[in-house]
Length: 349
Image (cartoon, rainbow, N blue to C red; front, side, top):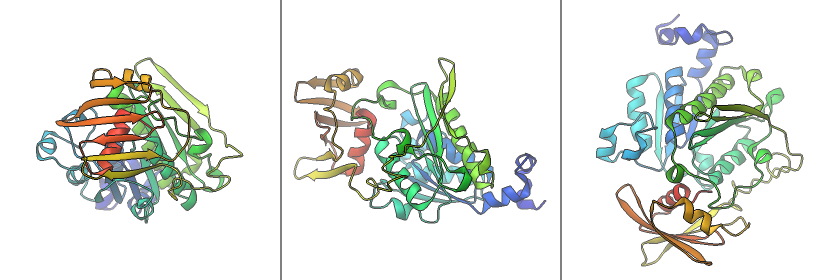
């Protein structure tokens, strides 16, 4: 065994892995979409496993509330305001210097995701909203890229791997969830919290599935969606069935990738605010439900037309104005990616 493989000796011993599987890992490129809770755990595991090239894309900076569950970061990163992608790159270098890490500090959207994923062998989900997950799913189906989906909030989570390749082909994410939940109907980590062990369990499953694909063991992929609740001792898998009328993998309409679906952002001149408008029509937003979830986050006022909430994200104050059609104005920034982040964390998509 060569010196470069010595560190992976215990992994190489595994059935179906061997030196051949390890070399496949070293030749692989994984694009990690988001490097928060799920993404940082996945990045750490993929780097230790020996994936040759990790591309880490994230728009945020490290904050003190991240450290409870987001590995690869420390208090020094908080003090210096390090972007998560750059902080992860630095920490991975001290874990496994054989891994080449490309850090990209950017918002993931339909205008750049194809470029960000150029050269990828697999997409790994470290995202925090349905809209960008549908975008990743569109790209995965369009380009034939495996996509390791994962999501976790509170004490529960789910994971599933999308692939279009040969006998291992699975349904896509929109077969399972054809439309995104209406804005404000889903809990978020910022409104209901999250237990770190739910994160690490889901991310471990995502990476296990990714390693099967990257080492040439796609026949071992689970064709079921994993659901778990680590606090209430629930663990089960649901059969994932293809939707014969799926807009994405059957009709090959990539509405999120082309920008026909999703949200648009406009900086409001002279107001230090960004307006977000969702293109997907749907039921009116449950403003009272959103107000209840935001209770304790700051002052919340709601009427039949809109909700207005004053919140603090870290040390920065923001005002969220949410209309019943899902349109929102985020006051306190002129940066669309910051506004989207606030919307995702406190309203949800």
